Image 1: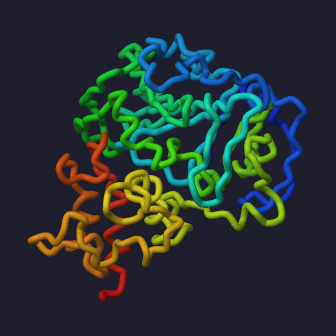
Image 2: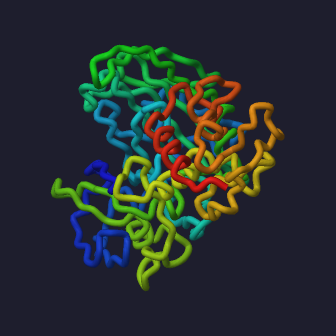
Length: 380
């Protein structure tokens, strides 16, 4: 279950009643007549430029944007709805918070398995934080705040605001840069870890039109529970698709009649209650499918969860660059040491690593799970 506290300002009226199951099946939600900051009053573009080519005219400082009412507490402005995804993108160990600003009176184009479509002026906000002492994971350093804007003409553009050393504000990053973080591990061992802040141009490499622009918010990622905080300060857990549907965010009904339980649902890699293959394939969908899909110009495998494993072009498949002299294939069932997927996922070499952009650390939990899963596959 995804658990994340929503700010009480955006959901001040969220002390309402839910009936039905909390496992993602049918839910009937009794929404309040006035849900401030969610159903009404959200300005398109949040003050950012309407055209992607004008991104440089964005406010220089985070405090000058319309994203947050209070930076010290990171309280988002009226009109931002918090959400979480079932299978997060690995970002070198950084933790994330997410919000959506949907312009008033507009609708999201819903799709069961494909990318959703968003009206112009929709803005996604994502906060990146890192625990510099993993013995105290609650003590976080704010790294960057990203905005993804659905621009006029159907394109998207991204912005990154990098937090200053005093943690009082963040400044728009244009060219991107690396910073070496000094981190103390959970066992007390210090290490130096590079964190890459994206250049503005980097955003389009993943958030492309082929990938659907916005990568996280889609059916399989939001078909799960989220812990909100109601106006009375009490936690409230409900399925996110049901919430968004009853708020009128979608262009068609999505809840009821068994729909939620019939929709696809990704699983967190670190959820031991789910089958290993389900967790691995969910991880591919969130970390790889923006480039590796049937519509991509890259002739390779298909990472989308909606594609069955036997049709993903992985098992005993050659690299799209052709046969390798070392004989490695993408996945060799029963042999992780001869599987290129393991090699690329275990490397931080820019010439070899996957994903290739902004990754400087290895997701060791994923690599270990991938190796054990491949080893369990019957050899062909």
